[in-house]
Image (cartoon, rainbow over all chains, first blue to last red; front, side):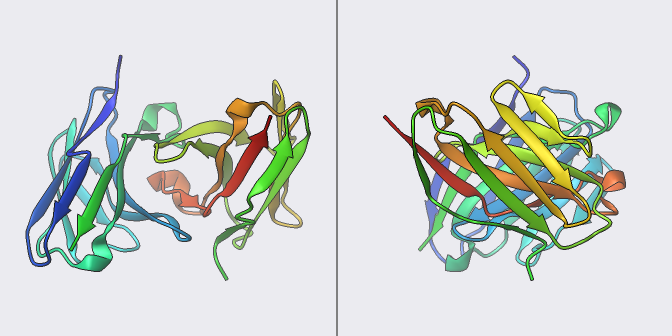
Length: 114
Length: 113
């Protein structure tokens, strides 16, 4: 079944470490997104990409970078992790061809920065 | 003021009850509206879109009031399996071109046996 997958599912790391979260999709969608979710704050957009050559900042991009290696892959990096980046991270995709408003989410990565 | 505001709940209701959630949005030019469902520690999933004329899907009814800038979700005959967090989601005026969505913080529903 077409799917959005994220690796790792859980990660504990220390302050100052570089971390990469990976997202892959088999839906054939052109648009991909990274969000973080914090209690009481909801989902907030970090970065989004419309295709391999397109990267856009979301509302909370500071401290993060992304790479769209292929249509199916979108990675999120924390260059130097800090404790307030502890959160649940979701990757999502959407398809312009179907109007694009529905987003399909991966299962999430729970990141803890000590 | 938050762009999308919801009562966090929890709403504790018995099985079979009817429950309604409201959500308000701040930008009157917002384009599209949705309800997503998120189970505990799982990913959000689209429950239904919300149309100006209102729409129904089985036990679920969604309404949009553009004049008052709120959307609602009504769940009839609640089931235990309806227990989840319901996210109000709005596409901002520029969102149509970017598919950007603004998520509310969610309303927690707990259906009791």
